[in-house]
Image (cartoon, rainbow over all chains, first blue to last red; front, top):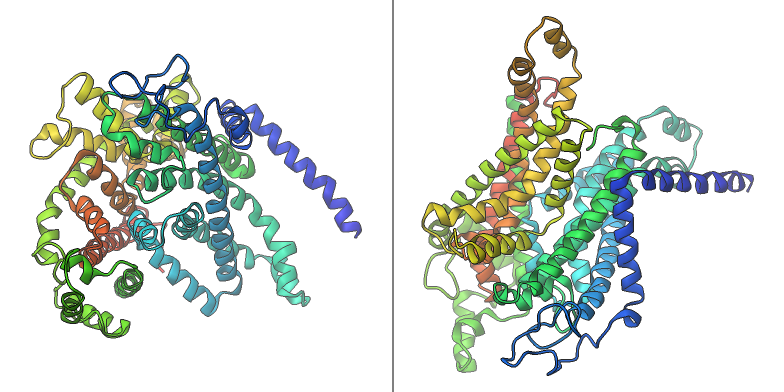
Length: 298
Length: 306
């Protein structure tokens, strides 16, 4: 019990230290700001959407029946069906973040689980798990995702699962290598020698050392996930209209990109911003959590 | 070394075998009935049943799989369900376009990435470095379809300098290559920068400086050759990225390669074609990784082949 009491304030202060380190770096602070704004938009979407994102309004079309450009009553213009782009983008933030967090969460748990199991138990467990990982690495990821999405009728959760199935591999490789080298270190060998249970060694001695890698690659993974969701939705096998996602807004309007560029480039900009934000924060976290890399990254 | 080579070759073959199995099982589970697709909407149930029988679709999964594998080992990838052609011929007809696109994208990303990396490393922690690194962050965060459509909008629609899509001349190749290489340019510039910084901090560089060699001579003759090799060795690993990228890029630009072939086949559930393209892509990825692993110890003797 006393362990937990002495550990807790220390863990909190470590979090605080990392956060303040993050905020001292301009790029990471920018990334954090973007993430905070997007999360805010996703959570309070129903309150801040200026119009109904599903309503196909006649006011939203010009006299020729075309979409309205940004400005005026519809802040960012309207799409081909006369729906308010700003409202659809705000609701789309939800889609992107939910898929980003759910898909990446599953990928992190699966990847870290496989990596730890293979690295810690070694032998046949490692051989089988890592050969399977090799197999997944050699799969053309996007083709696999498209085929999976085509098999299962794409819904929000299926898209998240498909992305997780494709994205866990990277994490498992990193964690496997790290666990294997940790498992050979003295402090783990000592625990084995004094007869600690595997579960205790894993939870109390290995996991804390792996946490920084999991945090770093987990953060960078969100960016990959956001991009993959956008790509699947752009190809029409991701999130299905009328539910808006930044990718499928571009999918729906891409043929008109020369006459209604805002319908493609505003959602495009949002995708880049969100992916960029997680990349910047993830990269800064790597810098902060891995002292051997200090100052090496740009 | 030869023992290592043999082991890696066997491993690669096993990985490909595993991929045939996983892909086959996945496609077996596709709910759409291929026989119905071939027969068309107005076909009678009898016709559909006949086609099912002809294609052997009523056989158990494992019988179908081993039949496919047996044919594959003889170089026969089967016939397309919807186009009256052998899958191998369809792929062979599309492959040159995709290879051309990939090679020119690799050239683009290396030129862009290495240049940015070198300049950033030499201007380390100065404004130029910060700007270039922000650019590289943006390039790894931008989806390829957004970059593709943006380039089309600016250079084809607004300025009218380049064709809006299609295939045939050098002008058609420019935008797709930049789009496909853009992501890689970001990764290579970051790798090149940190590789340069590594080498710049080594003792032999200090020695060269102490001998009074010019800065240009040190950088071009001593630093860059050492810094570039480990970065170039990564190309093999990138094949996977390209295989995903061509599906998107070929679809945006109407480029008639295997990415577009795969995309059309997926939409119409043309299973033999999907299988074929997946196998060709997987083989390319496995070969790329193999070459990268074999080349690495040649470039850096400190990497031992175990």
